Amino acid sequence: MALRITKISFPGLGIGEFSVNSEAIRIGDFSIAWYGIILTLGIVAAIAYLFWRKEYCALTSDDIIDYALIVVPSGIIGGRLYYVLTSLEKYDSFYEVIAIWEGGLAIYGAIIGGAVAVLCVTLYKKKNFLAIADCVCPGILIGQIVGRWGNFFNGEAYGYDTDLPWRMGLNGRFVHPTFLYESLWNLLGLILINLFFKHKKYDGQVFYMCFAWYGFGRMLIEGLRTDSLYIFGSIRISQLVGAICFIVFGGLLIYNLIKEKRNRKNG
Image (cartoon, rainbow, N blue to C red; front, side):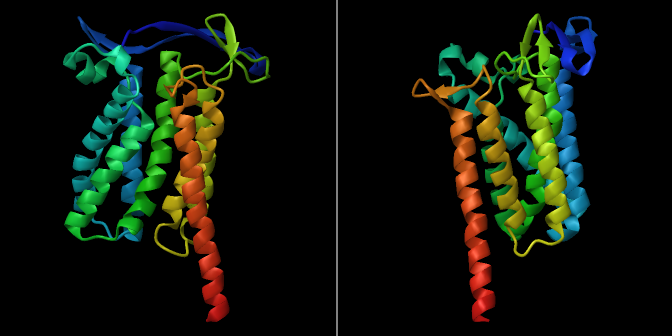
């Protein structure tokens, strides 16, 4: 990933221009980007959340470590494969495909890779997958809340030009700070879902809520971005997947709500 310095401001909020360096640490020819540090913090925060919620899904600390050792690498591999497969024209060699340090991860790929790993470990340990998913999925929101700030330090994941009061100045342009929209949207979802957590009616309810919430927000926010990955020339992949997540998981919530009401009526 090319390290760079970005000029950023939020004039409508009274924040003047300042410089952001994507490089956090340099030792000789070796450098570490803020993106990598922030992404790591997001992963650590998600794992910490699972430790906090472990009593609700019958997990021990050793179980969580086992999950982390399998799920984290699987999520990174999934995120990389998804990104590469949706932008094959950018890669001319196997080295470029595996050069994850050059940038290029997709959240949906990370979720798919991580979900497959969670399912495999859960089956191996003979645990309740839906109960585990209820405790794991809020961590996805946490990862995005924290991780999107890596985009801030890279000066990326922004939207179209705008003159709204919260516009972000970016190297002389004024754009939608879509990285911030998504971070705040997921923060709101995390707060609401955790207020609800202890009142869930069935295993899987929090899981469905997380994906419906995230999908709805991503579906709307992705439409503002200027760096989307496309399929069939004009369809934003992340917007389409977000819409599918909202419809499928929102539908599951409605289905179970109707089912619960019928059971109460018949009971």
